[in-house]
Image (cartoon, rainbow, N blue to C red):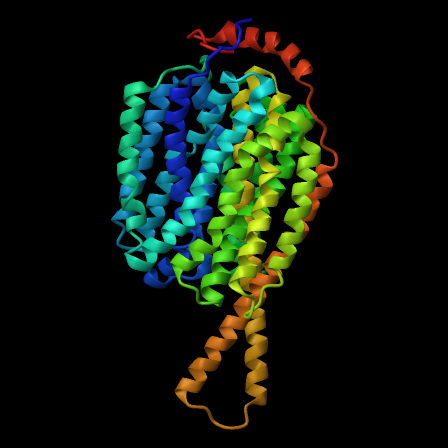
Length: 510
């Protein structure tokens, strides 16, 4: 077995960080801008949220293929092609004259970005020994969480003072810089071997995950009795089941589900999926409350979310070091208790809640989440032999993206359904209590008040559901166990031999 490199390829990791940071920043930039885009293009909230959930869905569908791309192709050309596709999507979104073109640009962006994070994580896994991965992944979290820290505030400022198109225009030069850096300095460090891409698996994953998300997304507008809703959900479920069965039967699966034979990886994957549902939905529901219910300007809304993102970024390397010392269970349990309590208090927000209270609750929630995600993910990956690293990172990212998309769709659907029901009840009460004719201005004011109260009730109820989701994640975290480094290290020779037997290019580090 080749020994671990004494000096990890820091320059290459930095280049990959730049590309992945751009992709993450682009995603979070749009959350605060959604209400503005909704007004500009005159589309519903359930439709405009596809700019976020659709982005995550495309990433979730394509991330499984990242294991194939990373195993089959060299690091440098793979990253350059992915970043080029991302740049094309960014330019298309920047010049979009209507919602359809904007959505298409976002989908193309997602195609390019889907391989970036898995490529970076695999490079880090192969560059650092197991006993130091917690700290290394903590730094990964710091850099990646810096994007959510900057995104909402920057987006709020730009949307308030300029046109929202600039959110994409400003990304273009950074993608060019990343491309130049990758052409100039990127190296091929990951081992490759000849594997085949099962196109039918991609078709099944697209039908499965796409059908499921589409059904949940339209349920808020059409209702669960609509054939399009339950029909697409059923088709999606069948597609996912067929995808899983196929992965278990074919020689070179798109996702090697052998990773789920390792219990701590399986448990960590489930917890991260459950938490992703509540996390991503919260990042959509909070701006909706702050802007659409409270009428706070986009820049101020972004500033209110900044402390939470900064705390999460600050805690990431600290959590990594604590994980190396104490393991995942105590960190995850404490973090999920904090997250559950904070999410519950978000369900109690009302029209009179002070901005200070909103900021504190949101920040405390992000603090709790910062103690969970990286430890459980790192612990699970530590249990895998080296040959399964690409499939482990691809599976983790797929589960998080798809769960986040479905979670957002479900909670936004719940919000819309509840808001519609509450609005109808309030309108009926107002009509019953009205004894004198009202002027047009009075009617408009009453309708606005009813709409505001109905949306607030929908958001409160959605956060209450999210509280139950985080509580489920807490219960699951109690079963976490720390993976023993010695046990994993004993697996490495076998894993290395399997890689070396098939690689075309000798890996620089194993």
